[in-house]
Image 1 (cartoon, rainbow, N blue to C red):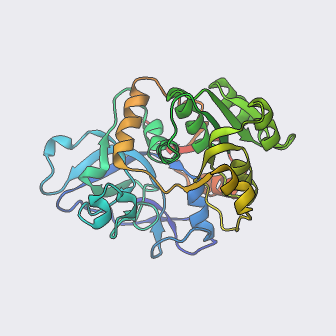
Image 2: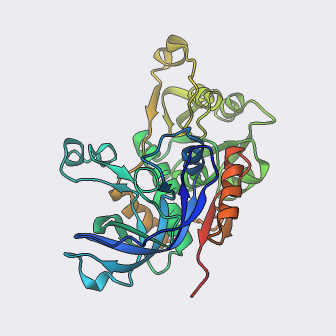
Length: 345
């Protein structure tokens, strides 16, 4: 089968013909219909974020149709439309028993530690294949598995409550979902901060207040809009020291900055003036849980999320196009979200 694989850090992905995986006991084989191209994939290719043993098939935003099942899985699941929870966990360790599956002692992420969905087929445990409602397109199901799920987890980690003000720093695929979720969950105001006017126009169409960071100081602008009080929650989705600091400085007293952007540069913080004096919090955000995916699928099926403006580009499963989009992600010039999709059969 066709598979797009990372064979050497820093090199373009390579198209390879590999043996299709066979589902073992408790597992399912999924024919991939859509696979999102995430900024994390660019980080894995460049080595900014480490992966498992190479060669490795990337791709962790995946949806498709169950093509075969292993022993112990009902045969009735064959043909079911599904999207894939990308964290493969044991369910038994200390962290899994506490509901912290993203820290599973044996945990693996598809497309990072084990082969992912940039391929014709993928095998995962049955519990990782969530039923995709008929009303939800494959491309939307794929994106829900990462960007929307991480945005929801970030809001939850920040203890967001209805009636609070939120600032979202970076309105790419993850940030656009964060804007919609914050509004759907009852935010008083949502400020969308980015350097791209087109992305800000899309965020504004969802009800956000746009802040063009390339033309104005985002901290001053957010504070001016809030009569100097700042926001209650700031989501940092870029991974750059400047945006981490801006998220922190945009907070009012007891505000919470949830940091989900991946970066490798240190951040300078004045502990008294910027944290202690206002009782501000900086909170790390890592992945999400399966239960949060169930909520997202329900919200999408009920029309509470609008992913048509998040999935701004669909391309066929072609290696040249995939590497070109990863190059653009490295240069921070990619569309909001690109998804590779199969042609209808």
